[in-house]
Length: 176
Image (cartoon, rainbow, N blue to C red; front, side, top):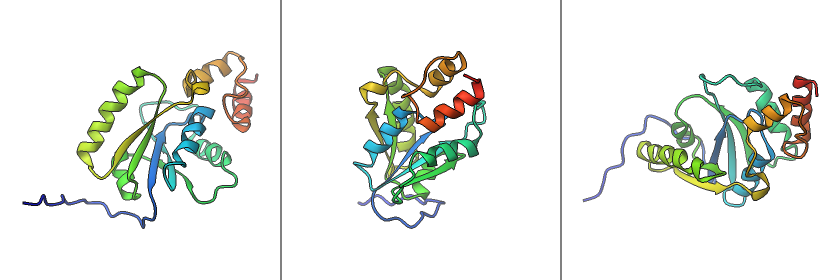
């Protein structure tokens, strides 16, 4: 007896190649995020960097600013990187975009607990979308967008931890 495929209320976009979605708030994007994107491109044909809209968080940068900062990180984009935003269930978004995976970066074991639960829930909702965990490169393991903002807010040096154009935007906000 074969298992019947469940009905999906979404229509998938035109799909070619293996696509992954890399979600986050990216407030701001860091060199750790960029490391995950570049390493994801070694596994997938296309990576969609999806800014997750979180209505409960107050972002430092507007959605438009974050989209612009991320796009500026990939000036010679050959179409393998797409920058977008998502409001709603990430797994539904990934499915509609034809993604076979959601990429999540892990810095520590503490990240894994939460990410594992999310991955299991996403798997329950949509079996055609896997969750892929990539360990953050050792040189970026201690940074997060929150830590970067806090250091910048207090006048610390964030050079080399974020792209130069992001560093400049943070300096302008916090008048470093």
